[in-house]
Length: 359
Image 1 (cartoon, helix red, strand yellow):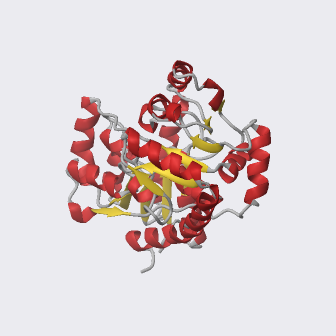
Image 2 (cartoon, one colour; image 1 turned 45 degrees about the vertical axis):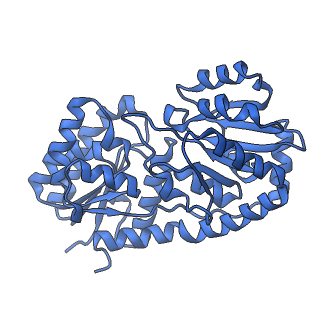
């Protein structure tokens, strides 16, 4: 009898984002077990616009693989996809589990929330990507014994020469030699708190240049805040960046910041990019909020600062700016610890244990 696990996800490369990165790493850990092959992955790597066209074929393939005995277990990549696939999973009675990302549980439209509360509690296992996400899953009615927190992990990259990367970054983006380089990278949505940081914190921090890489609905609000406070020359909206520039930014920035704020109907399920940045040498400073509390171990892999507390954020950034050598020493220590705690191998071991693949 086959012992294969099928992984089905609607978020996968070449599409870019945190969920896509996570899905790729989950698949890599399952594939590394040797019990799965390329025919045990059903993945969509396009835009949301065309996902409905992918779903019928994916559902048919899932049904065929289960009914022909090619898989014994199904792992569904997120809650929305699970809601859509639940009828097939129930019909076949195949063993299965679903990963919960956070926003896929708390998204506020009432019909969606009714759907979540009616269907998600029926899942045999829910794998939450953080303690905060697990709380939302239990609040949606899932029995506590069915909810498991799996610490995420990513492929540990090779270390670049930090001095060289910092020099290249400063030259590439015209950052003055005496400035502290702060970076935010990702989709620019409200919960990321970037307009808040520019509005309330940056103006009072001289000699700090803020690089913002990514696109999204908050781009105009960020630019407007920078103009309003006279710091447009210190805020660089880079838009979407190439993979090479992404690597350079994380390896060469002094500080990676994720100043998230609370937004109804949205949440930071984990904050994978904070882990990626820490591994590459940037000192991570993140809001003490939601899934970021799992992505950053305060004082070990980065620094957590109370969300939306202006003076606390100003004090932390100013302190890092005042002592570059100490900042770099901390970043080096945090990078090493992050590589130990958040490796893909550790995540794979946790996944195997929860899914029972070691038995």
